[in-house]
Length: 229
Image 1 (cartoon, rainbow, N blue to C red):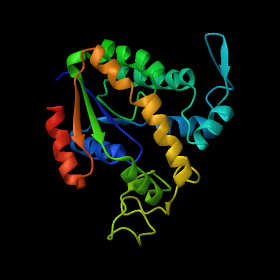
Image 2 (image 1 turned 180 degrees about the vertical axis):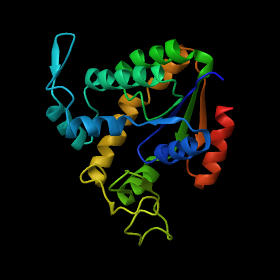
Image 3 (image 1 turned 60 degrees about the horizontal axis):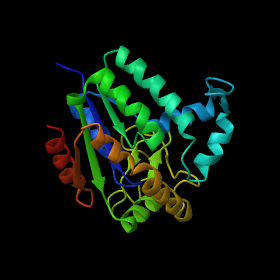
């Protein structure tokens, strides 16, 4: 069976991570999280500085952008993403990408790379749509677990949880990133810099399936499975 790539798009809080986790468990694909790759690089830089086309990028400077709710420099993010994708493809992994590529710069490099490594017919793209109001609510109430970074949905059943039911670690809020003012910046970044990547998929003749993200998780999951068939 040919190896595949599933790309899940949507604004901050759309439920990309939740759907990616569900697909990972159901399909056994590798869940490629750009945010985790960046966070690892910020904590333990693999290189003192990364030089791309004569320009140097330092992880500490990129972390500052990240904490302000802004996207990292496209060459820096693209370099790390491309390196990891090539490695995983060599290992024969099928991939689930959530929220990546994040910029047109990255899309113009990563999408052709995915086509080269996996084939256009094996790339599926799902766009989960939610309103800005819903995105702000979800992000401002979001918690993740300290160990594995599982996102925990906010509802009446989970609002009093203090421990992750999946791995037993403490539930925490992401400092800064999920503050209302930072969320507004992140939404603006998504609209201006990430959403335009959809045009690149269409130019590469890769169909984008749009679904309603303001349903119950199970309904969104069912629609996602239909979209990738």
